[in-house]
Image 1 (cartoon, rainbow, N blue to C red):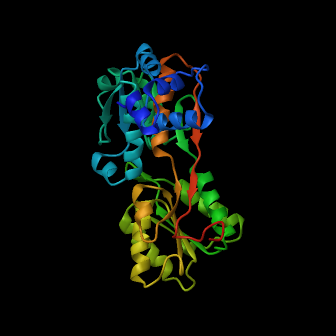
Image 2: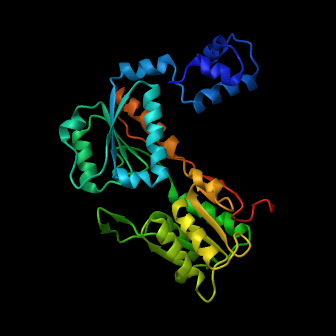
Image 3: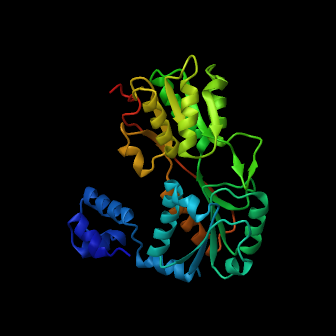
Length: 338
């Protein structure tokens, strides 16, 4: 757990100054810029004041179960969900809350396990039976990166439809008109859903609204790097290929890069690539990948705060949507024309 002394060293001030800033001492004489730097550094290091740690203890939130929709092997190859889990764990560690990880299997977790904890954070997609089971056996419950249709439960997520439409609007404003899409089928627990995955659905709707949709430019399969490679090859071999491709996440973009290189094409001269998530590898691809940053760690941190509110007696359910951010790098043109 980070200390006040570590924050003071990072900012270049005394520990006493950090303590007074974080405790909102109005009598402290300090510049607004320095005060902001201290606060930002504390947030970046995930510092929790003794007051906040005591609040968690007083509210009886001592042990939290993380119920994951992925297996350990599946999470390992998906940095987005690793980041979300780490956001939860770091915030809980700062508040001295113990965490218990429960990964997805073919069977429901032991009900006694959930009943032994103060609260549950359900990570990712859950079906109706799982939602009902979680509600039945959890004292306090928050869904992270998924919003059940029922508005009586807490949830925090990013709006993927808004994010997709924002990306498409920006790409067309840069002059891209024939935009392809590579994504995955909406499958959960082995069952393929009737409707496309949210980003694919938003892509089809937006392109149709603007008279730009061509079904040959939209391909979906599994959520893997290999699918990104294979589907991109299919699209690029069409008689009239796209001038830009959106992939559903950065892992699929890695596969798309491989397909583009195999065909002897250059990014972004011959084709632009944009994606979602902004995992760490995105900035190290060649060229660095333009992507929509979905705030996975912040979703995790917010879920912990919502769980604390529930434990303190809040009865009205909340649904929080965190904003996405467009991160422009060298795989596309720049919105400023650079």
